[in-house]
Length: 288
Image (cartoon, rainbow, N blue to C red; front, side):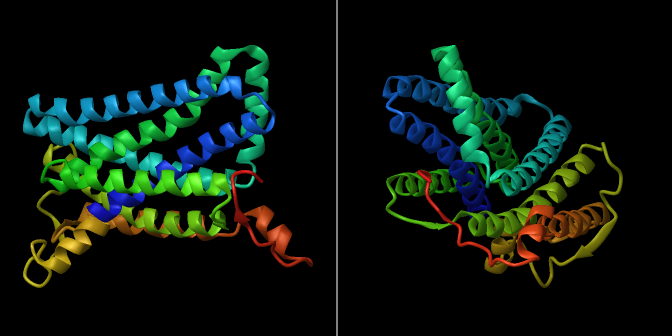
């Protein structure tokens, strides 16, 4: 659980931090530092709202009955999977053009006024924050042991993301962001598949879906969840020692479809690599 939470915090945090870095770098380079306070205000509002949404989801559902909690947890787990799936595909598609796109939007916002800059900053960061809030709730439900591990994982991931984004902004480090997003994207496919399976199991426990007692396998004798290796698999892939047929089919189907689509070269890549030139190194900084 710590690993998956850290991975989500790192990915969502790095995307949000890169967006902020791009906005700040653009304002500094164009000598419009006066607008920085509106960027930071928009970012602050987005962060506070995201934390509030995560706290409300996590700490208010204790009032619900068991079935209601399972139903809500299952539904939000599936929403979290949809967010994560959309995120990894969006970043794969937009990573090459996001800087230019954001600079153009910020330039337009500056012409409109401070409120537009604030709203742009809020929306740019708020989307990542709300995705993180929903996934945090799903992670807490999956952990079944309180909020400490998911909270620690998200804190570590976001802290590393902010540090990386700052170092990129300062030009202190350069690394291939495209490869980074590809590797973490593959890992997230497996994490999301586990969350999907767990969410469906919640819906079965809420009697919303059938098949709670129809098991695909029972590995409690050879791979118990309370062993160190079982705990490791559960923490990374949401492994369940008693997996229902619905969970197993969903896990296999999700990984087979999403991983295939994610790793398939896009049309632009095929066009760029086919004829002549070798691919350019894409070690990136925010200031490029």
